[in-house]
Image 1 (cartoon, one colour):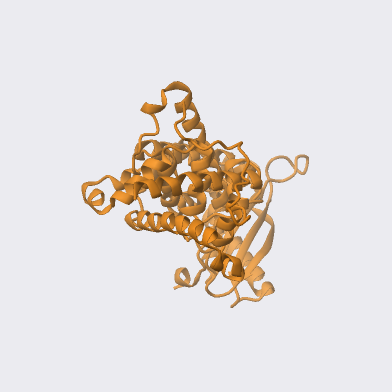
Image 2 (tube, rainbow over the protein chains, first blue to last red; image 1 turned 60 degrees about the vertical axis):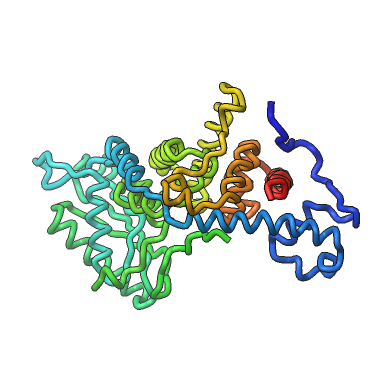
Length: 206
Length: 186
């Protein structure tokens, strides 16, 4: 049996002697809105309730300080990636060379080469990259593929310059690095970021 | 030079790439979010080895599900949800199979229990961990996500799989219990 465990289903309407709901008083304080309510500063019942919460907050801060070192994640990362590498998703096989050849490259490998080619340009990051084989019936499985690559870049670029430059790099990589015949290269600029271009800041404990 | 100038790839970009089979992009995500998720799982499960298992399973599950990941939620919120869900399931199954006294022992997260850390962690911190262990799994999850990870009520509700109103209720009940426990301890 649970000891004094508070029941979730019991009503949360716990009123202080002044008539305020304890839950609301705590939420207002937690969300930093306590200053806007003069009652909270004047009422002894609310003040006592907030003191309790502050005591808890002090211990929470001590706990966070004691745990401020990032936990070691090397082992977990290694175990995760070992499993991931057993479950790779290489994608479709794409034809290399002429009609009489039987050489193929998997889509994930080709996409990796194209993303790297795009990212060899300064301030450019590559996202989704799909490499689509020729439509069935359009001369069989062999023939030029279509590349669709999404990119993000900093504001040193204009969109047309960026699209042209990425297209040139991708075409060169297809020809020189893979030997893949490419019929069309669609460049989709999904975002232009400022020079910092950092990912969302990680959520910090308050 | 070009490498320096390139903006760091965002979670969204990396998640899309990982969904298309780019395992290197996925590894960046694992390195970026592993520590925070491990901290969360340690707080919820009270045991470092269990926490590592939960986080490992959550990442593997994410790798399998990424091709369908639509990016409606941020990758980090999505991972919070998967890890929380794994931990809650484990806590619920512990309760079902063991008498209460043998589960939820007041254990500090593993990275606290190295000798140096134990000395540093005060009696108050230990008392908090002991009180936390007596909350229901959902109360603990809601409160930890709020106090240690700074999630909004909306994100907490999503992570735990309950309504926002229910999440607020869980947090209130947790605060009610923990403030009493800390008053009593003092």
